[in-house]
Image (tube, one colour):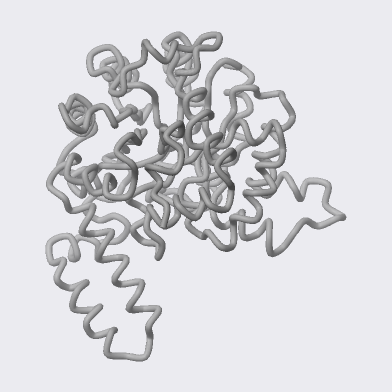
Length: 374
């Protein structure tokens, strides 16, 4: 079997979406109070899997195995330990955009280590002699936290971080005053890309309904941001998410509803990018592409659209993907095989460099002036 590393030495892969936070950074009772039991007694998952393996329910056994793998990764002692795990699946030249999350204020209980400690530990990883050159560290922000904008500035100016991750459904809108007045202007001035969650799944504030979460995650919620800051390089992660990809393929669009296509986030993101109205809008295929057989035909069609193919980023969403059947390497190799070398090079090398501001174009840093760790 060809190896990702030797197929095309010109494609230095950038995985634009991975996580290294550990259970020390996640709320004690997320997603339910039962989670605390598994955290302190992980053998219970193994016991359930052992029992399930002796029943005819193979799907349950497989799910529990993936849950065990996910919990094992998240329970690593350090972010470096988590990062070392993802290195098993990619060429040694691969770089990874590492995205922290601030979940202390979302109503699911306390966290052992706050976002300041999480940022500091990520900075230590980015400075590591061996692993640092592969780390592209991003900061994150919860704008209602006291000193939130100052923490972003600290991460960039003192820790050398290269971008920003936001996750509005944790409890804020993408046009929050702190973001609009302080953070987005700072990102534009300092050539920082922004990654934001754009899927109906994922983590949300405990007190929020699905409807409220969707309101701040909908691609339409970013239109004012994009119009106010046309030079902000914003990526809508997950390309709308798995459920909207499945709906796009399974249900189609009501011909009598003129808004039907805009209600589907996959269709809406593609429309926004192809319109040319938002020249610095990107999307990534993280997590979504792990439903590989169902979604790869639609992705191939998107890659035939000239404007759209230039704005799709390769990302995986490790280690959230430990809950899925396919491994990181299996998905990456299948993706490279199905898209072909030219299109894979586009989404895994060319587009990420442009989004990160490494392409040498207007407002971007020349590649020879960009260090791997920021």
